[in-house]
Image (cartoon, rainbow, N blue to C red):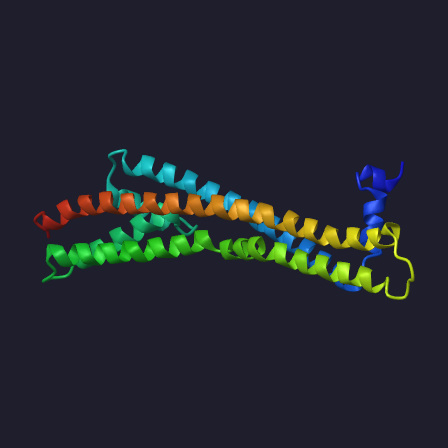
Length: 234
C-alpha cells in the first residue's frame, strides 16, 4: 500500500506543498506549527478547567456538609499539594480571619475587610491561572487567516511573475501556482477556527467559574460575619 494512501493524503496536494515557493512553504510551516501549539493548549486547558469544575463541586459538598470549618481548613493546610480554586479562596480567607481575630483592638469591620481582601487575592491568582495561554489562542485565531492570506498573495504574485517570459499564458500554466497559494489560506483557516472556538468556549467557562467563586465568597463572608460579631473566647 502507498504510504500516502495510508495517511489519506492526496499525492497531488502534497506535490503542490513541496513545489511551492520558499516563502509560501515558510508560511505553511508557521501555520502548521501554530496549529500544533493551539491544539496542545486546547487539550491542556480542557483538562485544567475540567479539574477546576470538579474540584469546586467537591469542595462545595464538603463545605456545606455542616462540618467544622476549622477542621476543614486544617485538612486543606496539612495536605502536601497546594490548594487551588475554591479551596484556595477558603484557605486564604479563613487564615486571615483567624489571624486578625487573635489580635486585640480589631473590630468586626476590620476582620471582614481583611478576610475579603485575602479571598480576593486568592481569587485573582486563580483566575489568572485559569486564563493563562488563552491569549495565545486568541492570537492564533486572529492572525492565522492573515498569515495564510499573505502566503496566498505571495504565491499568486510568484505564479504571475513566472508568466512574464511566456508569450502565451494558459490556465494550465498558472493553475498550480494559484493552487499552492490557496493552500496557505486553507491552512490558515485550519489553524484559526479551532483556536477561536476554543478561546470563546474556555473564556465562557472561566467567567462561569469566576462567578461561582464570587458567589462562594459572598456566602462565606456571611458565615464569617456571624463569627466576627460573636463574643471572642479566651
